[in-house]
Every structure is written in C-alpha cells, then in structure tokens.
Length: 168
Image (cartoon, rainbow, N blue to C red):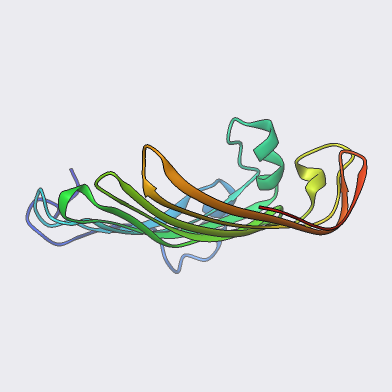
C-alpha cells in the first residue's frame, strides 16, 4: 500500500532530474509513473512514461519493431461504471511510431490508432519500404466495427514489388 493512498493524496514513482541515473533506468526499461488515488471507488489517473531498449514482447514478429530504443507515454484514467480511458498514447521507436487513444465504457469501445512502420523488413523476409497505418475501432466490445487502412507508398512485400498500395 502506497503512503498517502488511503488518506488521500498523491503517489509518485520516478526520479526526475537525476541525470545519469535516469539514463541508466531508461536503458534497463524502467520508466516513470504518476498516480493520484484518493479513496476506494474514486477515479484513478495515471501518467505513464518510460524508455526501453530491445523490448521482447514474446512475439518474434513484434520484437523487430521494438529492437532499438523505444519510448512510451500515455495517460490512463478510470471513471464511473468501470470506464477506462487511455489518452495521449505515444510510442516512438526505431521500428514503429504510433499514437492513439482508447476508451472502454461498459460494453463499448472507442479507439483510434495511427502509426508508421519504418521498414517492412522488420516484419517479413524479402520485404522493404515504409507503411502507414490508421485504425478506428468502435461499437460493442463483443463485435466491434473496425476500419483500418495500411498504405505502402513504395517497396516490396514477400519479394513482390509494391507501388502506392493501399489496403482497407
């Protein structure tokens, strides 16, 4: 139990302004969080920021996207009825840049994601070129409506040339 959490107040983790120690923490995949929580049942607000190098997500196809330095930032908040909102999501890495937001409210979802894969060779052999991604997810969590677009201006996919391709 964090000091101050039961009495009302703020709980903070991080070492802002520690220079070299912050850089070492970033290399080890450690980040900073800030949380405000007052009494059970109250809303929670988290401000998350972190850095990592060579993240392993347990999925080889994704590991290439996060092989170098990656920064992550997001704000997470809860509200009445179990509402969860993730805003200002930002991923900045050597293989992937993405922004987005997500709200889960009861049995509904409302999410938007935009991103850029720096080089398709990170995902598949005999592939190269940049890809941009846009996705909008709305409706029931059980059967959401998904509208997504992937654009590859120039490159190759699995050994086949690609020129101004767009898939929706």
